[in-house]
Every structure is written in C-alpha cells, then in structure tokens.
Length: 113
Length: 110
Image 1 (cartoon, rainbow over the protein chains, first blue to last red):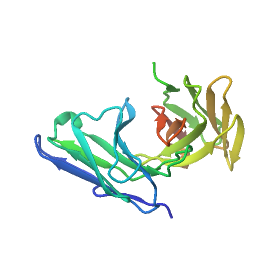
Image 2: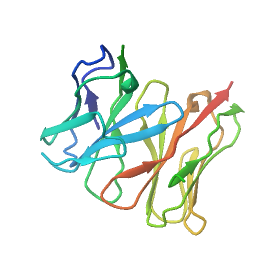
Image 3: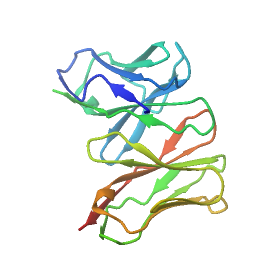
C-alpha cells in the first residue's frame, strides 16, 4: 500500500525558532513536494525535488529551505518561524513521468506563536 | 488570472443527488487531469485520473474532460454523506508538477 508519512501531525512553535518537518515515502518515487494549504488560498507549492540533492523553488519559497539527502526523505526547514507560517503543511510524492499523480501525506498543522 | 479556476462552492446537496464539480483552465499544454478528495484534517487522496478528452467512469464517479473548451468535470451519482469532503482538480503538462484548483467543499446531507 502506498505510504507517505510526515513526522508530526501537530506542532506548536515560537516565533524565531528553527522548525524541521520531515516526510518519508516508501514508493521509490523520484519526485517529492512540499505544499502549504490555507483557507481561501488552496494548495501552494513551496519546493519540490525530482532527485536526491536536487531541488526547485515553487511558488512561495521565501522563508523556507529543503533538504533531500536520500530518495525516500524530503525535509522542509523554516529557518526562523514567523506567525504567518502558521498553516497546514502537506508533503507529496510521485513518479517522474508526465502523469505526475501525487500521493499525499496526512499533513502537519503548524502553529507559530 | 489563475491557470486553473475551480467552482468555489460550498455545495450542499441531499443524499442521493447527482453532484457536478467543475474546473476550467487556460494552459492548453495541460494533458493530464486529476481529481483529489480531501477529508477534513487529512491529506488529499487521488480519486480519478484522465488523459484524453472524454469520460472515465469508476463506480459512482465519472470524470469528464473537454480539451477544446478547457473544461473538466467530476460527477458523483447517488451521493452519500461519506462523499462530504473538499474536491480538488489538478492538471499536469510534464515532469510531474501539478497545478491545483482551490477546491470545492461538498456536503451531502442525510
């Protein structure tokens, strides 16, 4: 069965803290994605990676960085958390083909105080 | 203007109704079309995937693509309370990066 897991379901952090969100997939997918989802704004792509150590900026990369040291693992880093980064963060993965059907993790609800 | 526009909803229907969810798009390079279903506080899950213009049926769900009009639809027959969720359309041109609609929230009342 297809599986994308995220390290936390809920997180509460303080402004200025460094935050790590981890995502692991067990499907041998080449592509991995990080999105944030906010009411009224839909899914917005933060970063994606199509191979180990490769990354590309999405639509809203500011304030975020990513790391992909192993094929199955993709980490999102908030260098200095701010209140406007309070959101639902979703990780997804897919094969590197044109169809690009994505499999999502359960999401992490992050609250920055 | 967004590349993908989705009927915003919300949509509330009685159990057993036929539901129509719709998206339009502007990028003629999109070739692959998906519908995802997202239950509250969960990640989206792939519901339907289509490639060409026409209809694809899976149980009570039918995905329809009209490339000439740049319009896609998802029909749900005999809707059930368990269909209550947010439905996201998504489209690809290549390399697996999708463009998503903002979602339509559906409530099916018993």
